[in-house]
Length: 62
Length: 320
Image 1: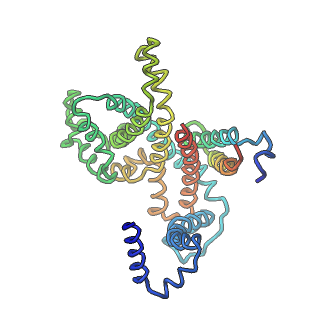
Image 2 (image 1 turned 120 degrees about the horizontal axis):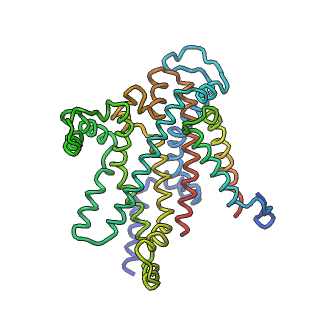
Image 3 (image 1 turned 90 degrees about the vertical axis):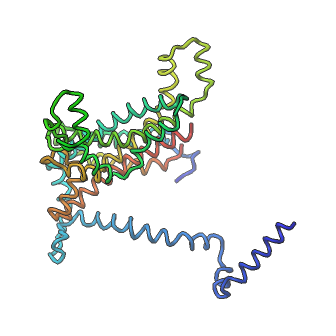
């Protein structure tokens, strides 16, 4: 990982971490909602993407 | 001086008691190496008990393995187990049952726990006694709680049915909390709320105790009423702690097994079959080990994702 000074401003940790957290939350809701079987079918992919993204972006500098 | 000389004497005695061969071996090691020497058994144990089974489960989730037929040929099925779980209406139903349990138990626990914390935060006669009484359910084992609530819910002799019957003016055997399709999901919510409300209360109490008195004094100077003080000071200051309690209870209830299994075993029918009970049935009643491994991986990733959010909120609370 490059030094925080050279790190692109757009890749700051906070907003990306929030986005990954939102993705996990949306995935958890999709997993347990009673409205659409199709949404349920995609839920695991969304949670997995959110969790993987969280693991990556939590290493970004502040 | 005397203290230093006694320490030296103690070190000499310890040195004399150490076997020479071992002492010679350890003397050449760096601090880092000695630290590794102490940590290694724990790491090996963690790898053997946690990490290896996890990797093995992920591997099995891509196969048709059945634990009751260990000698049958193992076939690689790719993502088939995952796609069949994520298109199975029965598993979807189990997820909805889990959601009902998680949402209602957390909502009740937060309301009651926060209310109790506001009461306990005031100084009154018998404060310590009532705090201990309120905390008692949390200290019991879920297995014990599941068993004794089964007795309390007995239609004819159960204490719960008797009390409700007296209050509602009905016959105690006119309703069954565990045997009724409409009431059983609420029975598990009720028992979980009874057991875990004290935990939420404790966390809220920690939040209430962390609010500086200056804020309330300043609000009084500004002539803010009790409601205004609650909405503008108490609730915003306790909110991160409440979030912590909600996430922790959410994760715990999402994977709840023991209490539900003892109370209803998922019945009547599949009315209270939460995700972990479905997993147990697939793994140890239908012996679909590969399929249930895939289901376990789905639940694990979900809990892992939620745990990440929990740690993030926890760090936020720590930085306050």
